[in-house]
Image (cartoon, rainbow, N blue to C red; front, side, top):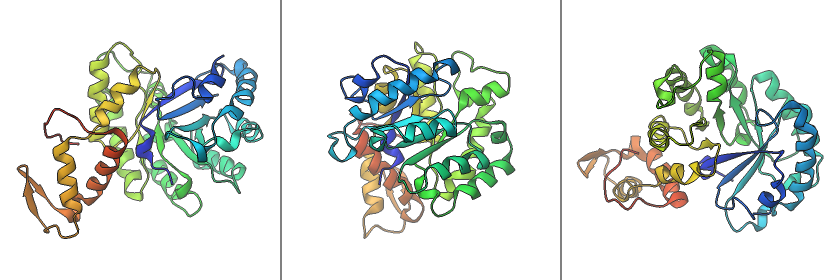
Length: 304
């Protein structure tokens, strides 16, 4: 079973790209941990037939999941249920890990789930409609998804930051993280609604390619808010995001001691209180992050 920690920086690829088959064969972007072939906002509506033709050519070129030498995950971001129906009928579709579902509400999600009956595709519903601003609506969506047959299919929930800002008539200001906009409270509320039920949430895109300093600050805030995985819009963003996911050696040692079978109920390490009863979930997540992204080499203690 795949874990959302493995997603890393998920790179969106418009399905209209002429080199889609090269990407599918691993000749390009092979170092990216997760790819999302987009048929939704990443292309114009008039380009949808071209996108589907490209996918029909590219999907058979995907290496079978059982023979992959690296843990790259592959998804299609569908435009609507009808596009999903067409993608499901394409040769090579079984090599996909699953689908990213836009503008998710309980009614829309139910349509997608009907199409996926009898399959084991993973899904990543996207939270990007006006209902996201209503705590009651999100609680209802959480209850809908927290059911047998649905919950285990959901790898992660994706937060559509630009769509949510658009609903407010805004665009992220340059030099500001999302946590310096009205979405700060929205993201915090989504975390407290969905994470206690076991759903992972991944972080939105950062669209200013030249501002790596603010991107780094935002990824650090993503982690502080408990978000795992981040949408990337350019390959140059991927190494920076993954570097932020690396684990500090002192933190990893702390996690190991917290998870030790004979750990004291409370102990001190690196001038920090460690309490296995409350810190074990953090420790397990840190172990997985270390196995995926490795260690920092600066020797400092982080607050991951």
